Length: 123
Image (tube, rainbow, N blue to C red; front, side):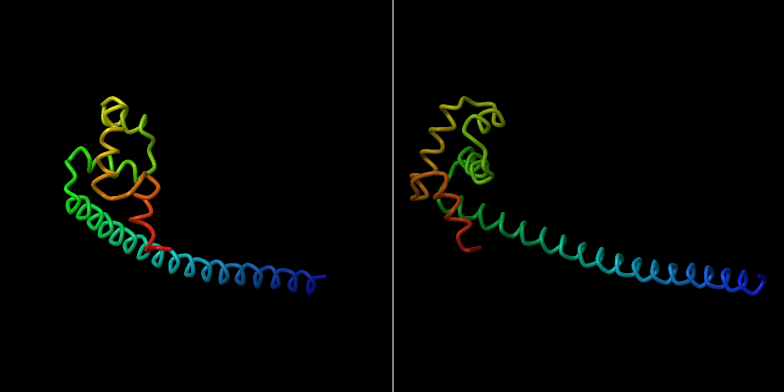
């Protein structure tokens, strides 16, 4: 009986030690994954910032007014005319007029074509 108990205790100790090793391995893998994710997040922020600069420069090249630039960015983000008017505290009619000027100056026919102009190179 004593030998069986010692054997059982030895097995339990071995199991605990095995679980600790597994947990340590998982912990190391998690740290590596977190580091990779952090690096990816940093790269994504850099790329996003550079892409925003490219968009801003294109809006300047199209000679957009500051208001048209704001509306264009909000259109690219997918906001409706009503939502843009709310954000900018203007009338929806004003936003529609600005959108018309944006489409004319950029040579596109609408919001979808405007978005496609900027995003088609990613596909």
